[in-house]
Image (cartoon, rainbow, N blue to C red; front, side, top):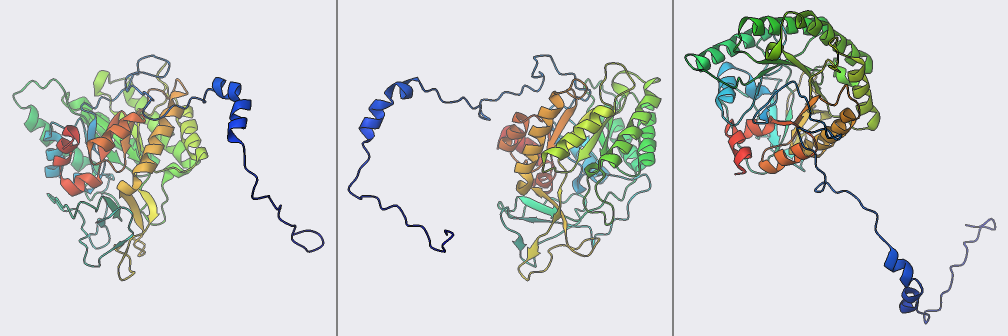
Length: 408
C-alpha cells in the first residue's frame, strides 16, 4: 500500500504480446553452449571406505567388530539367555549389554515399558501390547509398526552380574576349543564420573584375569527417561567431566596391560539437531587427549544415536500409550521414525572427526531405525564402521541379524 493509502495499480500487460523464445535462444546460443552445470556430489557418488581416511591413510580403529553388526544397549540384552543368544549368533560381531549401574536399577515393569507403533502415526489402540521386554520375548506386532517408544531406565542387573554372565558364556564357548576370533562384549554403563572410573576398573581387572575376554565399556551419557537427570552429553561441562574420568581410568591401567586386552572405551550419544552441538562434542573429544603419545582422544568409539527424548504417543482415547517415571508417558523415540536423524548424526560426526588427526580414528557405531540390509547399507555409507539395532531386535529377535546380513 502507498503513502496515499491506495494500492498501486497492477501493470496491465498486453495479452496479445508473446515472448519470442527462439530469438532469445539464438541471442544466447554461445553462452548456452559453453554452460557447464556446477558439479554436485550425490550420496550415491560418495565413497567412504571404512578402512581409509579421506587423506588416503589407513584407519587405525582400536575396536574390531567383525562382522560389523551388533545389538545396541536395550531391554532385549538384559539377561544371560538373551546375551548368550546374541553372542552365539554368527551374524553379530560384538554384543552390547543393557546399560547397568554399579548397584543396579530399580526396574518397575508398571512404569518402565515400550510400545511399537506405525511410523508416521502417533496414535495407537488402547489395547496395543506394551511390555517390559521379559526374557525370550519376540514380538512382531505388524509390518507397519517399525517405530518404538520406551520409558525405560536401566538394567536391574549390576555391572558385576554382567561380568559374571559373560564369564559363564565365554567359558562354555571356549572350553576345549581354540577360538581365533574373540567376539567383544561392550558393557554399557552409567553413573557418576567416579562410578564410571570404578566401572572401568572392574572391566580392566576382569580382562586382566581372563585372556579370552575382549571387553569394551560404553558410557551411556544419553538416556532421556530419568526424571530430573538430563543426558550429560548435552552439556559441555558435564561431558568434559566424564571424559576426564575416562582418561584417568585408562591411564591407570594402561601401564600394566597391553595389546587387545586393554578395555576400549566409547560414549553413547543422544541425537543432536544443530551444528553447535556436534562441534561441542568434537571439541570435548579433542580436549580429552590420551596420556599415550600419538593416540589422540581417550575415546575409542562413539555410539550414535540413543533415543530421541521428549516424545509422546497417545492412544485413540487421547491418553498416553505408556506409563513413565514422571507420570507423563513421555519417553524415547526409536526405530524407523528416528532413522533419518540418526543417519544425519553419523554423517556429521564422521566428517567432523575426520577433520582432526586426534579424532579421525574414533570408530562410529551407527544406531537408529535399521532393520534390513538397505538400512545397514545406508549407515555404512555415511560413515558407520559398525551398525547396531534395538527396535528391530525387539520385533524380530536375534534372527534379525541374519535377515539384515542376507537381505531377506
